[in-house]
Figure 1 (cartoon, rainbow over the protein chains, first blue to last red):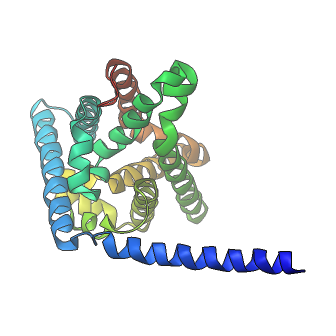
Figure 2: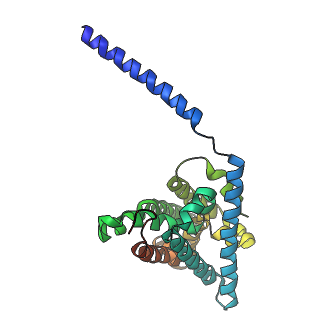
Figure 3: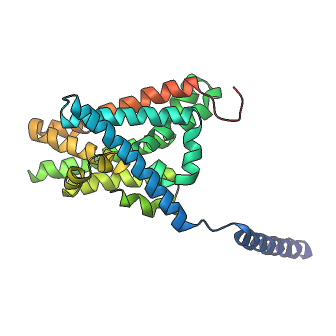
Length: 158
Length: 105
């Protein structure tokens, strides 16, 4: 069956081409400057946390108990994160800071607003409402499951 | 103070990193390692998502202490209610108000 042979040869050829292409791509793609990225992440993450501390101290100064103060500070940071995502600044920051802007709670807000804006054209229920939790949903789910499991263990051992 | 942030630049997608951090924070909190860190670092420990995981678990344990078994279900969200509520509400208004950059609006 010469036809089949031909097909196989063709496939092998294609595979080799793909591999060649991949290695070319690998050569061209710049390896990210790790140290620089880490420094950025550290500085930006640190600044966001410092900001959080400032707000916490401010709310503590208003005679709020410690827990409520840090909850208020969280709310303010979430608002800021959402706002700067809205005006498009946060994503620029994210390109530089990587995990530095993703890991703080402001990044959580960013992960809600960004897809919600993106999918607005799909309507307010299935676009904004549903896509809001594309990233935040898994975070909440696994966070709660973890809390449940640890709570269960704690309760049994009590 | 935010040394943890460093390592996570290279691997996975942001969503994976976030999930990982929340779970990690929860576990650290359950083992009892996270609360001392919060006492020392303040917002440095509560602002990252590790702190979110910590708040979930700490709230659960607190409610178990006061309400018993029911606390497993009521505690986690009570402690994080402000954060989640703020995120959803602000997130909604911001996405209604603003359009993605560069795509007109």
